[in-house]
Length: 463
Image (cartoon, rainbow, N blue to C red; front, side, top):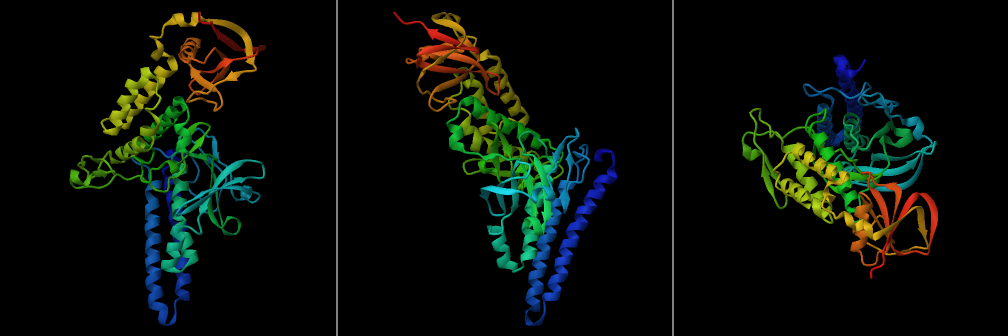
């Protein structure tokens, strides 16, 4: 029976989490009481109380992630969080998304260090069966842990306190499922095996903005489109409107050309409270925006506004306008203007992106291209070139050659004719994510070879 059909399931999950965390805190609390003695006892009691208060606040911070807003349903039919070993978590469709637990991690091999922050360390590991995954754990040498130890001088208590961010991320990854969010592959809490709680995620590569800037516009548009689709989902998620408070490129990874959110520990599912509109101020280094304070005392829509403007200033402004197809620039410029001024909602922004995608995939932006230009090329089917004399163009799918995506042979012919050094181009069966063909342009070749999946177009010599 699904959790949506059984209200007791949600309550039991919530109770289990609260009880588990409370037991941990109380166990640690009584341990401190036994240690506190002599002249230092008042100081230890004060320190203990401060740490207990912070642990209690972290428990309360997790509670909203287990409460489903009215009209929403819980995703899946498994426990939302396990203190020991999650063996299986199912999506609403019943597919397995989390099947790696403590047993699978016992034979893992660490192959690379992917990064570390204030709270967490990320490693690339290979499991015994050969699967590559990313392993997130508490950064024992991180700023959060060092600060806690300096304040409270209690390794066990600090381990519990610092690990709450990772616990929060595990819960959010179970609740929020979208193609542009990394999948939670599993989790484990075993002090002897992994030193505490770890999360097992899909393996991606960190976002490199310089590489993205050098990539074809089609690939950069794909990144921005995926980001808008993600923000649309976060605005209407099962938890309500979700804000990414630490919105930076480093919070994302790339997987097979798709942008995916991988860091959720600073996400918020609560719209800020307010009394007047002035309380709903959204401040950025160069711009400020204000939302309306609703009758129920919330800055409704502020989370969405924050996400959308951050997407504009960290991604759109760098990736979207540059080298956009000339006939698509009016649509792209409109997106840049409306997001830069927050004139449109995320719903309207997504509609604008989908319109650009439709026009680009369908070739509607090429309607005014003169069809006669293709007559300047001799066509040789089921052949490919060898001994190529390549030249570079930018942005190309290959660094040492000129390989571009085209809608059809007509667009390829138009490109070749605009390049003084181009004498021929080849179309093969290779396609991009939009279904467009990959065309290879060259200044010459030495011979033709049979290839049933390739067609060569040779430019006629000018008189």
